[in-house]
Amino acid sequence: MIQPLVRIAAAAMCGAIVQTTTPAIGAWERFHGDAANRGFADVDTKPAAGGSFSVPGLGTFALGAGPVIAPDGTVYLGTQEGKLIALHADGKPFWSRDIDADESIVASPAIGADGRVYVIGAKLKITKIGSFKKTQIGSKLYAFNATGALLARTPFPSQGLRAPTTAPPNIVSVGGREIILVPALYKNPTVKNGVDVRLIGFSTNGGVVIDQLAAPHPGVDVITGGGPSPSDLLLGFSCVSPGLATYLYCGLQGGYDYNPQRSPAAPPFPPPFPGIAVFTFAGGGASHVIVSDQRHTIVDFSVTGSKPRLTQVFRDTDSQRTLLSPPMVLPEGRTLASTAGEQIIFSGPNQNKLAPVSSPGFVYGAPTRTVNGFAVVAGTNGLSVLKDGILVSQMSLPPSFASAAASRTHIFVSTTDAFVTLDADAQLNLQSFDWVGGGKSPPAIGPDGRVYAIASDILFIFPPPLKVSGPLPHAPAAVVPKDPGEQ
Image (cartoon, rainbow, N blue to C red):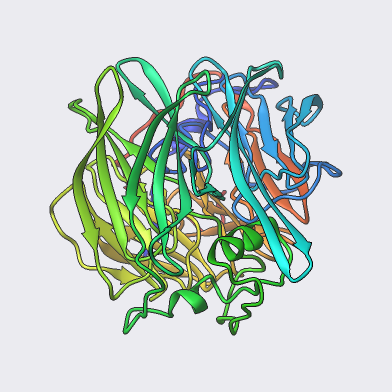
């Protein structure tokens, strides 16, 4: 193993311990933490071990769907039964709302600056009429306020078939105005088996303000290298297997009887469509919206104007690769995403090119940025740590189909067999909390340092650290060797 690195934390012991939790200084308002999908919470945590509180009976959660957390600590989750659930930070019920009948929630919600909660309802209904099948397919955006009042219910624009999506919403701010953005799949009316990716934007009141083609799909591609074909990729799942995400994709393709061979280490259900990343350079300027079409292309749009307009900045296409994970954008503007060829690729808007590096098997969740600027990638063959395009270290862990979560002091990884706590730079395995049925949903970190994770459709809440009398020093660049016996 490479010499472990951790940031200096000795001063954390300089103050007296008191029986209160740390004050709220952040939130986990998107499916992977922030709008850029970095999965980092600027709070201190403690290893996830004993003392957790479990919340069963909430419903069932789709692959990739995890909790989001408001600045006041309220936890929001969406279930496949079509229920948006709000819990207090300690897991006690707050409120719940059902969306329209026959609709499911298969992705994480998103929280706006004013506390509004946005969630996507997805529906696919097949009715047999003699030898024919009538297909009703589509998605709606729902907006609720922080106390559960329904503010908007808007169908996605219709392009022949109304758009299905399994992607989570994200939010971009343009001139102080928030726009909820969601990529959606539309059947191409002129190409057999053709599927287009469109980017749909909604106002906070639910009106459609953006409807733009992001990536046209001219039929089913044949991959000659860099990974399995799309039929193997998705991802070896069967169109007769359970789950709305399966039926949405198969319904759009018209492949209800399609039953490809399962790929090794395929997830139990097809992966969700990748959510977008939203990024702005530190010096300011227009926001960038990064879209992966889950095939060969990453597209970057800038968003400007009082009437929001998307302008393409770059289009990165490579027919020899098949993209898997949502994009994650580092502060310097470099986008990371995984491929079916078991690689992590680097894209723009930063134009300084880096070569792909090996990933730990198939990676379905967005990479995670640590306090010291490392990128942590959890996959079906363990975990890898990257820095500036270089593979720093690898660790053997049970399979994971979800992103890791990072705090100032720890990395948390949901695997099939255990919830694993690593040190801040993912060099040491500090704690394993054994469970079954994990690895499907990404963990989240609350503003007081509580950690939330899902296994077997049970929400586990791990307690926050105790507060020290003085503020902890924050030295992201300072690293020292750590005694393996320390936590």
